[in-house]
Image (cartoon, rainbow, N blue to C red; front, side, top):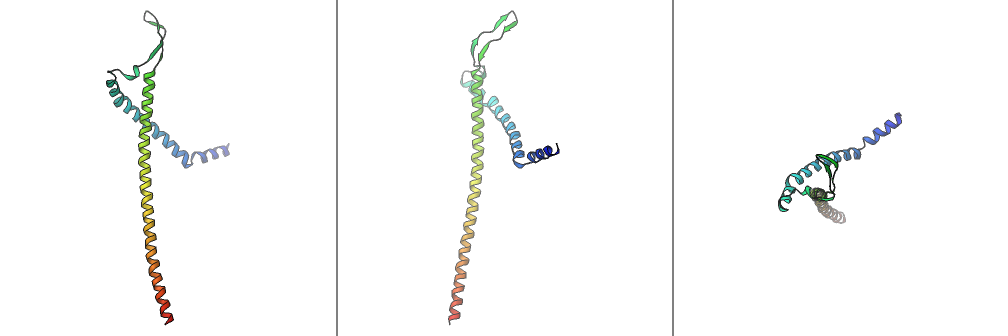
Length: 147
């Protein structure tokens, strides 16, 4: 049992597992933000564009409900395609936001790589100047020893 707990502790404390857990938590929070963006800002505009209807109200009734007075004996059977469309819009917005974030991160990485390459090139250029100077000194020393 102690060995099992030790192995679990080693597994759970790995950096990539902790990074993944942080990613899941941040992803859940990001999902809530995007859902609010879609539900509270975008879908009302889509509703206005479609004549003022709430997009999630779109459905296809396959079988009507059976009602006896105020009691529902059998609820209606529907295909809620409006909710499905809203879910697709949610996905597209999340995917676009992630694309923009990844693109920004890649641009930062590219800029840092270019700066590092420029610094390495400057170091090589400086080394070349030193090599030229050392070569000149060597040649002068050779001439002095010949004379």
